Length: 503
Ligand SMILES: C[S@@+](CC[C@H](N)C(=O)[O-])C[C@H]1O[C@@H](n2cnc3c(N)ncnc32)[C@H](O)[C@@H]1O
Ligand SMILES: [Zn+2]
Image 1 (tube, rainbow, N blue to C red):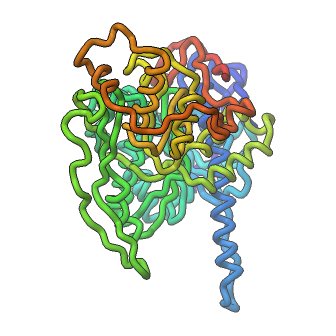
Image 2: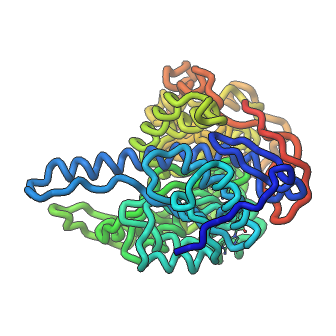
Image 3: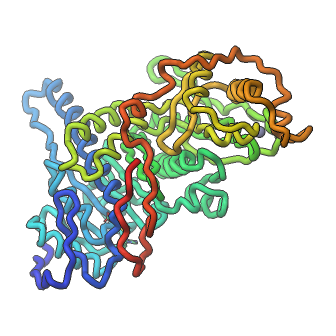
């Protein structure tokens, strides 16, 4: 039995910071623990855990109601949570106060100071030490130890930098059907081509300098979660994958379904990306031919899907991944979460307008079209000034293709149209506006423009070209706050970060 905590702190030595229903004491001489920009991360996590819990409870109750066993006992619906890297304990305190039906939270950190802070904040917020249990330990050993001691329903990883070293442990520590919430703040590695070798080592795939680098970052992290799960005959299902400010935050459900593990090769692959025009193509590793009674056939995919030079402009291409090419989100989950957040109001979530905006854009995202173009990149490739996005969207829709934005990038164009159709639209724009005199013969722009337009391009405004999230003026993309914005350094003396402005 753990020794009970005897409070010895003097509140005058601390600043009080309120976030959600928590009031946290931060030492006056140490700002290292609190990053206000991460309020959005914590708000989203609370809403995601509640949504996951509602869905999990419905499944349990349905099974219980269907059971004909005369001695059936109603299943427990209270949940357990592990916050493996907890710092001040703010997140756990908020979870305990804002999520109903928690059995207990194990709130862990490596550092003695942090654990002291967790205990202090649990006490100051009037929570019991059996509900929020402070623990000092290395997250990796703690997670492995609970594989035998009893797993958690929710495992939350919110480290400084990469979550890669903690992913295997999290897969071991989470219950069947449970939820893993993962933050990675190392986007300098995940979403650029500065250190591809480091990204490959950590996540098992190449990042790219591409318009869709943030979507690729999500897909690389999911790939590494999936690989870790598959080694344990487990399968992860992405419920919600968010690219936010300077980090990614991903929510996945973990299934014990060996049959699903077999489908992973057909949902994993690489992406080829043209260095000049941004055209891209994906190549999966496997195929899955569906048969009766789950008797599917699995094959190695045909290769390659592109030539060495880009078919549109003749430039060289980069190879990104291996990465996850399946769905980034579960539509039902995101819809339920959006409804819950919309009903909750701003008193529940300080960042509610932004939550609604991001969730709505995610709901509008095409599910089966990995990666995207970006308006200004398409225009600069053929040296025209940017037309309204709605004009390009309309042309693609009028040609019979699907189109959406992506929450990962403002001005993005996701479509199932092949690159040559996208370039037909751009070629038609150039025909309307005139070819730039700066385009030299034989240059990549000249090569793009030398192809015949084969698509029937109409710019008549299409009813679906302007998404609802934009029409009803939700906060779709965030404007960066000006100063001191980004992940907090481990031991920085940085002035207090301002809360971000919303679009
Ligand atoms: C970004 S902070 C966590 C912030 C917190 N989750 C929140 O929302 O307020 C990361 C924490 O991880 C802790 N940490 C780093 N390595 C660890 C390890 N191997 N095991 C446990 N904690 C660790 C650090 O001491 C730090 O407090
Ligand atoms: Zn190209």
